[in-house]
Length: 192
Image 1 (cartoon, rainbow, N blue to C red):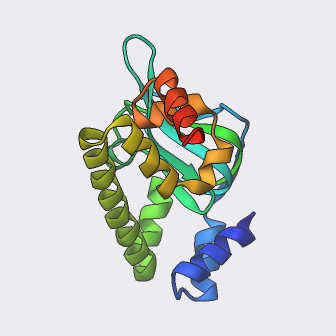
Image 2 (cartoon, rainbow, N blue to C red; image 1 turned 45 degrees about the vertical axis):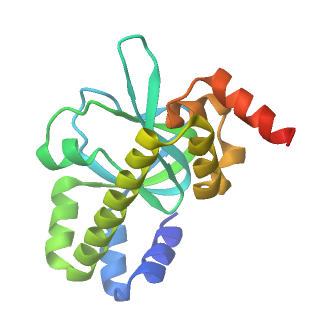
């Protein structure tokens, strides 16, 4: 499991073997079963999480029980509720496994120490935050301005590798449309 993370770091940074070993050795491995929660609403997010294998979703629920997915995190990506983690306040979101997942977790104190001691890790962290902000802005703009059909087309362009891994109801929850609407869109596309 650690080997895949080390490969990720070697691909995205020029960290020394010693720094990579230090970062990897501070991680705690964790497995999640399908639908198992990593973070539950009202808990404080205490870990930065790297996905070795599997797929996580970050989501919230509204009063009627409807689920709205903010983000999918596949292998070789990170997951956390940044606001809860940074401010050490209860989360308003949940993070759960879409499928069996293998993870590495770092508690805040250990990861903060690594960021202080390893400037290149801090640079990677800033780069990931910047990329996340850009993606969030693009997603928000699409959510506000696009039709249901355009939202689905954007999803298929942006995440073609996730289409076969996600049930339709989760894609609909990510797009903010009903399952019925998504089914209609997909049916229309097949008959074009």
